[in-house]
Amino acid sequence: MSDAERPENQATAGAALRTALTGGTYERARRLLRTLHPAEIAALLEATPSPERELIWSLVPAEDDGEVLLHVNDAVRSALIRNMDPAEIIAATEQLDLDDLADLIDDLPRAVTNQILQALDRQERLRLEKVLSYAPESAGGLMNPEVVTVRPDVTLDVVLRYLRVKGELPDQTDQLVVVDRYGHYVGVLPLQNLLVSDPDETVADVMDTEAEPIPVDRPARKVARRFADRDLLSAAVVNDEGMVLGRITIDDVVDVIRDESEHSLMSQVGLDEEEDMFAPVLQSFRRRTLWLGINLVTAFIASAVVGLFEATLQEVVALAVLMPIVASMGGIAGSQTQTLIIRGYAQGRLTAGNTPRFINKELLLGLLNGLAWATVTALLAYLWFGRSDLAGVIGLAMVVNLLLAASSGIAVPLIMRRLSIDPALAGHVVLTTVTDVAGFFAFLGLGTLLLR
Image (cartoon, rainbow, N blue to C red; front, top):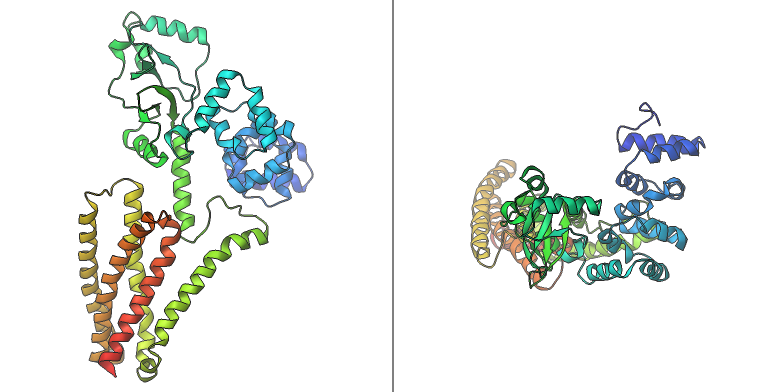
């Protein structure tokens, strides 16, 4: 394809591809797909409804099938694999690195998985089984067992000759791992040091002994934070005895960071980050109706609290006008605190040692916010309705609700973590209920006591 035909971005590529498909020029569509990276093809597939998606998939170059399957989300991947015959699936996995194959293999039909394992040589099969033995969201699940190791007592000239004989390096190799005679981690040899140093020097003379390996059971999010904090491109993975098991590279870490970001965004509205945008209506209905049902129940709880004060609302109509203000302010304040505490735990910034100080700070902040905004709200209510007693009620309610909001923003994620429930997924629904109920009860309760 000429430079004039090459798309500049995903949106342009999608439009050009749809034009080619609509016009029936499948060969042009196939040439267009050959100019795209597998990740770009995956994004196009996710943004395309069926059956057009199946048509595009049939035009994807066979050598890119495996990489594309890795990049699409779980729902789209399952749909694509469902329409592939076993020979196509096996061919798609042949060019994948072992760590990428480990990510994909759980989604494949069992019969196909057995054929893939039988096609591997014994060493590769053992390496794959080793990766699969670790949790997917751990350093062991992320690592690639293909790693080049050298001994500290050999010269750089020997290392260079060894690499020439080897003929190739694993992708994303920026350093070699230095091990002792028993395979224990000693340090790393950056390729830059290897290339610019005197060939007669030994590996021990130029290696980096300060680069720390990553324990095999470390959670993936902590691995990502290590890479971000230290600007790493790769890192060795070791077991409890310090034996080198493999390495993690930046491309795998970027995937972790992206998945965490998408999970945080989608969880705020009770959605799965792996959901297919163009999934069948009934499938999407089943996924979403649970959280809508939970939200309806919580809304009725809040309404029931309001119903307890029906007589007060009939006498002081202004309370109904001002009521949403208190609940809204509490919801925002609670969400701010909850977001901070979820983020703090996700990034490892909140620990058993500093959590009490964070709680005290948030409670004090809730009190100060309550006092500040109570003053503003009371003044506006007085200017609106000309009643000092009503202004006092909403001011007191604001102080109480913002304090309760801060407490709830802390308590809800802590309790959910204790119950092994993801607070990013369910915390918003629970917190909204608590702040609405507390806000309505505080405001209407004070109104009942002081205005009737």
